[in-house]
Length: 233
Image 1 (cartoon, rainbow, N blue to C red):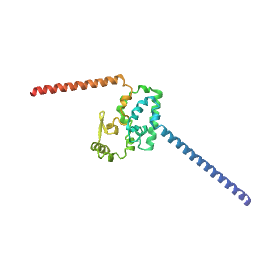
Image 2: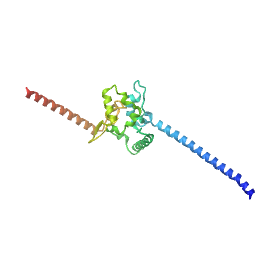
Image 3: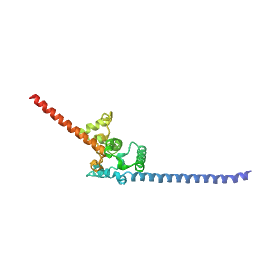
């Protein structure tokens, strides 16, 4: 019995070492695979974050041209350049950022594959800018905004009201807390309207009707003013 027990002990040790070795190999392989996947994800996020990637879709060329003429696109002497995802993705957290990126990517894929991207009315879409530009993105760069605008009274008052939650805007029939693009409507894309394709005919008709109404109101106001002046004299 004693001899058999002595024979079993080395065998058990070999078995344990083998298990430890296999475990270490699997752990090392897992860590290596994790690092490789993480590297690929980080590089993919970087490569798909900037204007060079975005303008590869032809409908984004007007946006790229307007962006190139804007301060955020590097125009001027500041040396600052914001990437597309700095403004157009949620920066609340890394999870929010990545989930939003996947969501936007899937939406764009759906539009390009199953719909007609050339049929998009970008002029109308611009009116919904608050849903495509995130305050968390703006504040990710402009993190010292309140202090930076202290010397500009008008900007300081507006930003103070914004940060306190008291700055409210009317959206349709409802009121909502103001977002950056409610005041800075054309930020990021200078003179974008010049580069966009013409709006659809019905959009032009609405614009023309609005202009005619405006002109008619001005004419009526002038007539009313003249009649009042005559009455007074």
